Length: 257
Image (cartoon, rainbow, N blue to C red; front, side, top):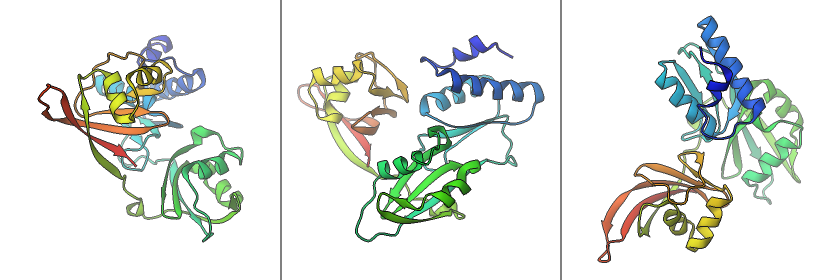
């Protein structure tokens, strides 16, 4: 078993002490007991992607679960076995108002206004007038009992029993032109901003490459990688389709919508 200080080094970023300590405690329990151990936090991609690499490198069985296709926030289980119970559910929140259209921020804001901590809530996917929300099972009944309205819109909440009902991720295919595979070139093209503005976004820590914050404007963007830009969205980088006469690359990209 590795020490806490060495364990923290698996995360290539500055960790939040409370989150990292909770993860390490669950790792220690799993290592000492040989049984499964659940991190009952919905972790951001920086955390769960690093934990996945750590477990693969050390032959540790694991599960990172967010319910939705390509979920951003996931709970993590060390020493996972198929019969293990996952302590989370998906709530189906139906907007009963015919006169208002609620957005992701409306649902999240209403949940947090109940005094719920952010790490107890996973992804929120809005489809038509329904929001599908992953939450820890511990708080599910509290949400059902207390979330009566969102803004001025009455709502109906139930636990989703048929996971097949979950909406799929929607993406828009686009083609961009880049002069090189540098990150700043990609940010400029996918966000439709100038090169200097792209560098500013990177310098401000608003860009995640493969779910990890990077401030290296010259970082290499590989095929089949993912870029997230706060305020602009998430993008899957496919591959180079062809080159222009001036040897610029035309790259296929899928933007999450």
